[in-house]
Image 1 (spheres, rainbow, N blue to C red):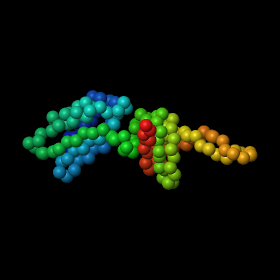
Image 2: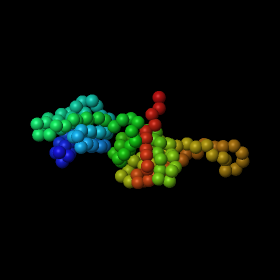
Image 3: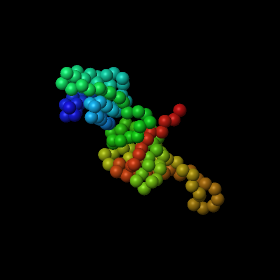
Image 4: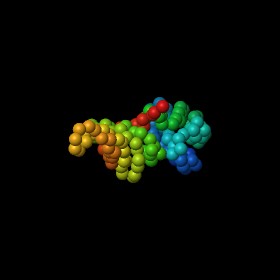
Length: 153
């Protein structure tokens, strides 16, 4: 069943190339859960279209199943490079392999790494007081343990 679902899902995603797969889970009880994201977000209509593309091409007489198609939640961590690209310009909070937490604006996303920028208050090089400095970190994807978009209101 998994191969058939993957094939149908691939066809549905080829019809709407702005969508991409985050996760496909099929339990032993044939509960199919598809999690999508999109370069311009995911609309309810997108979930319905993908759901229909899968459901209408599987035979419940052959094998019973349940199907759930959803978009990646706003509070869910980013998991693939394509998600970072769509969030350039937004504030991220990342945890690195070294246990460091960095919060800053995502200014660039390449195939290998992301670049974050933020402002920090540091002691003046000479004299008393502090000065605001622009900081930047380039973090390879493999060094990111978790990355979340910071929602501001």
